[in-house]
Image (tube, rainbow, N blue to C red; front, side):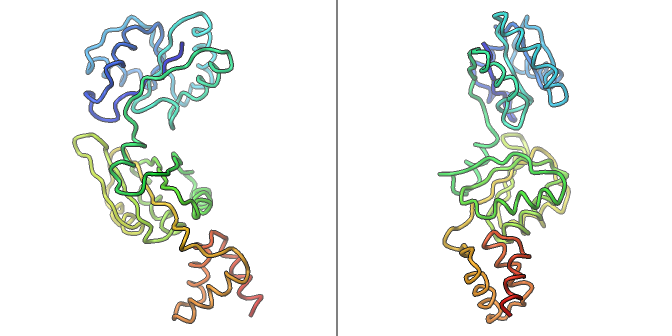
Length: 275
């Protein structure tokens, strides 16, 4: 049996009681970071006779066949990552897929989740949401991904590294709008937990200082009533309406493109062809 074991995202006392039982009774334990895993064992007061193997992004492909062989031999394999649920932006998916393909039972020890915790404390709508994980590191790819999410009506959850938080929030503001409500959740459940709420541009300005710790970002979905219909007539009319209110043509084109979820070049061409 393969057991996906959720681990605390902050405080060790948040660990589910069954976690200690599974770790103590495992034949094999696959851990994202074996040193951090040893600290977890100490925090939980658990002793295990299991064979412990490292299982992280760098060796996941190569290690999966070995762990699968243990499973096929009838051993109980417990998979843990540094924090939260395995396979959620962490190692685990490949092993789960391999186990399922070979009709091996897969179960889980439910545990803390940064995704759900951030949603719960964000103050944003949580009736419908989607998890986007880490955005691409390259600026161009990141911008294109965010532009594809401009019309997403569900609240969106992202993970991010602290040193990229300012750049990501700035890119979000550019693609989704300066005033789009969002929350930056830092060090969830830990001693220095902090939740900063505001518009995306405001949050980007906050992140211009030094940002530390584990970061989860929640962004409110698009307001469907504010969307502009993606037709040539509607796009050009929207630009003309903004110009009539004193907005420059350049800014009007950019704003309409963002609201409609289309490239600026498309709106630019429509406006100038009509002219």
